[in-house]
Image (tube, rainbow over all chains, first blue to last red; front, side):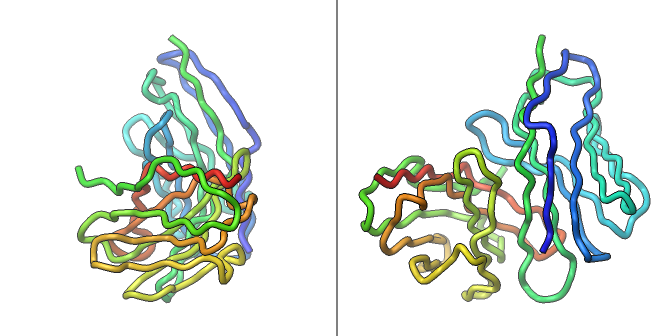
Length: 117
Length: 114
């Protein structure tokens, strides 16, 4: 079974600064995907960024980038130039890659990020 | 942009009652999921559904739970006889394909069992 751990329940950052959210996971799988989801207050959870474990290059999406360390089983999210709209709960999630028709996500507990003006 | 919708947003029920939580996935999606989050705990997978059948279910998804896609647009989660510990936020999600297709989540239904 897979587990995902987010050790920072809450974080805060000043607008325009950079913040890094931590995530570690435990799995015996070699092929998998990792995700960061964002849930703004009273809104849907939406995908921020995705990383395929077989790709060495770290994924980036505009101001969002990851530091994927496969050997260390670490998957941190860096948010550059933080904006007030980045205030949200951030969830790290794991998905096993394989055949069949099941693609369940295993989530961490979440980190509540507050961006201060 | 298409969204997953869920109704109701909140539901209060008495222990032992049946509840049905409703979801309308994005129209061209083929994979459907239910997750739940008990207050203060992780979001947990309940069940995945593809091609009109359950493809996987977790230990939580016991005989009290069932899912259905009754009319090609709705996707429902039924809890036959609710327990206090079923109180949680229930999220529906859908995806166009399998891994690593993005799962799109609904806003959730907050269920409170008294």
